[in-house]
Image (cartoon, rainbow, N blue to C red):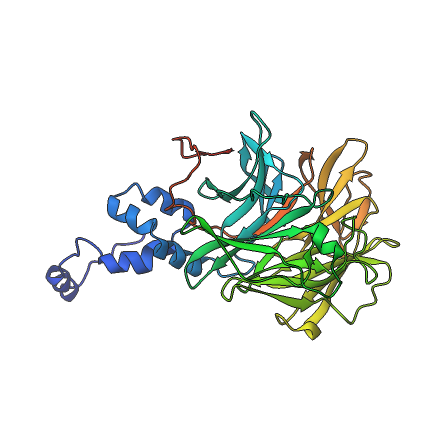
Length: 433
């Protein structure tokens, strides 16, 4: 046992002169200590005292906390997997580790539109499970288990939220306006009957509105996109939300994703300037029979995923410098099983996640790319396939969504318009495990 060292006479005298501080300075706690705690700890801290509750729920603190703890990068971003009523996180890739974050009890994801994520909030299109069929949009923070319905989302005129047989459809995108510290949703309403009858290069008149979470209201914007946005989810990056776009109608979602077809460029909406812009897709690329099947974020950059039907190969192109067409470069090439479905997204380590449908069991699964030298298993045959691993979470009965997610305190200071349970693990439409 180590011998205890007796303090010197000088040390004893200095200790007697020092007066212990009864409390840390308020500014030190606010600015340097509390913002460094994780989200779930801060939610518990709101019960300590009214001062802390007021501070932690303030928009200024929420913004400061997010900037300090969630700079984009592999350390803080991780895939969130949404499937029907369930939600999973995939934080660790090696070994594979899934955590079931929550489950929707009174509503389920509406499967014709992918979810979108921005700074800790997720924009969901959901369908209630009780009474008459009712579709609505929710802003959801799964970390703090709070959600908020976006009021008056649907117009009262002849527009419809559909991509096929109706006269028009609505495209939406979630973003964050840093100058006003406000989450916003842009909504674009198309009248397709009018669009298809117009000359190809003529701009179509659309109805564009912006929803502000801060004011909980909609307002019109005098700006029109130069093209028809494809019916896929948007990607928020650099203050803008991005979509794939066309100037030519294509009845099939995947048909026409070649130079002869419809997908021609990337359209974006700038939340600061409140206007639309355009980014060109890779030009130095032999498309052949390739189809553009996915448009995602890859480690802080825009990424386009092309799929070759003949040899089941997937090419991932990443834009090195934002907005510069010549900066597109081919990041990876992946060989996929023929039964593999669409690419869904990327993990924080840059691994591609795809969905896979098992016809025999009639359920969906997930495939994730790994090193091309590594042998892993596929879903149906269980035979080894180089560079792929089956993510054996459970047998999904519905197709899945994979989105990038970063934790935040967003919605903590908002009065939810939904009927939330008093239990902290319950929230409108969803219950946490």
